[in-house]
Image 1 (cartoon, rainbow, N blue to C red):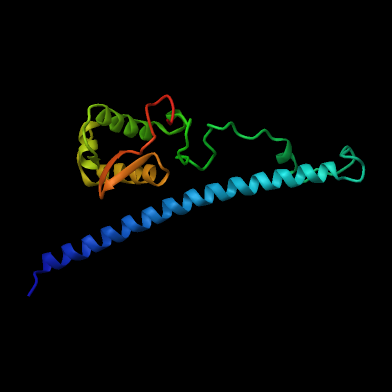
Image 2: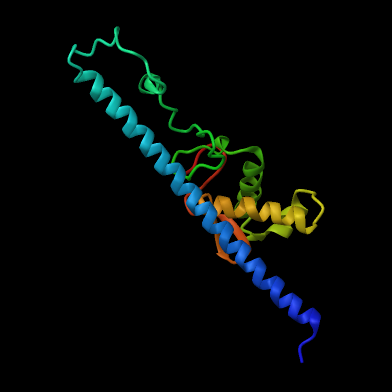
Length: 178
């Protein structure tokens, strides 16, 4: 007959796996949502510009009523490397500098870049917490794990083995993404 502690540990492990799966799925969905919102905004702007050009008065909108959102068409688009609001960790692409990331994420990338430079292998979140001088307690380790998983989902990091992280192929030093 299994012990109560053994059964609790099994249930806890199952719950932990489910939480990790749901976090990964949430990160993936968040990335898709950010891309879909960007595409939607681009189509809205394009439609407004076409409406302006095809307007019966030749595009003169001096007498037309300004509706909420009508100024979106004139708003400059964000620079290529800028972080969009509500998107703390953008999807990695070539030429994207580390400076677009929040400081905590840059710190993780720097630690992993140092390991790559020293020809050391992937690192666990517990080891990362120790490197950062944090208390190696579950709350701190899980916070790092969440950030590392988000970086994996966005293409900045790779997870060659469960719970072990390294820089993704193509991601280089802090100056740029390649």
